[in-house]
Image 1 (cartoon, rainbow, N blue to C red):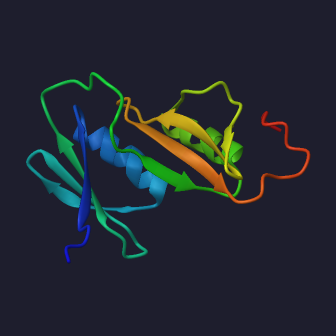
Image 2 (cartoon, rainbow, N blue to C red; image 1 turned 90 degrees about the horizontal axis):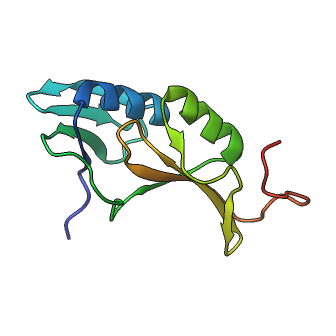
Length: 128
């Protein structure tokens, strides 16, 4: 059976997007080769490859990351500080005992910050 070796994100500015995702995920920048920037997961997961392409992003991603965090509001604020843009209205989306916030990286690629399991008691969904 095959396994996932790497995940590739197309972009227009590989250096800046590689910097964003390295800081966002705590990955190590391994290096560059032409249009590619390789990021290593210190936990041993698949590598993240940032590939510079000429065409612009035009529609919603068909595949996206769901990143898990204990405090999705704090993590959303941290990622906004790195250049992400919050796409929903700061009120987490809730479904099946999970809540999440939708963001986009600096080039518009959507991803979610998720809190899985019990939603904190008294949590109205707005930032503290």
